[in-house]
Image 1 (tube, one colour):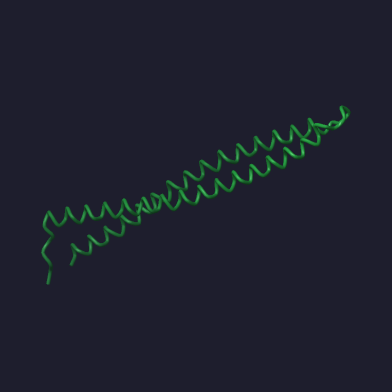
Image 2 (cartoon, rainbow, N blue to C red):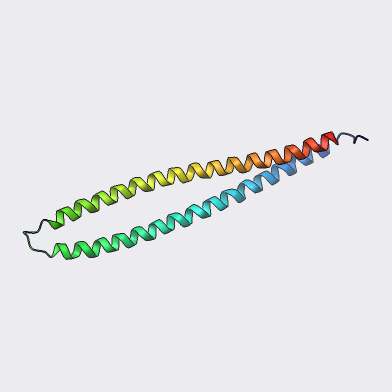
Length: 126
């Protein structure tokens, strides 16, 4: 026995429910990804602060060295290279994190779309 097609009001309500659930899922996925990357960025900031503090301690001893020492410019150059490398790493990391976040949202949207299209198709065929 075939069921009658849903009324326009029922179809509209099903679509509204689908859109609301898809939006909620997207927000949850975004929140999870954002929490993950915020924690990673905070960890990296803490590590950078620790390294900067360690570098400050090591260069303070060099500043008091005799004028015949060639260690200070080399340390300054090494520190400059580390900072440049870190900036490059952070910019790459932020771009990659954003791209992964966008991909996670798209995947979540596609899963929700597929799920509810299957439900609607099952309702139409029943």
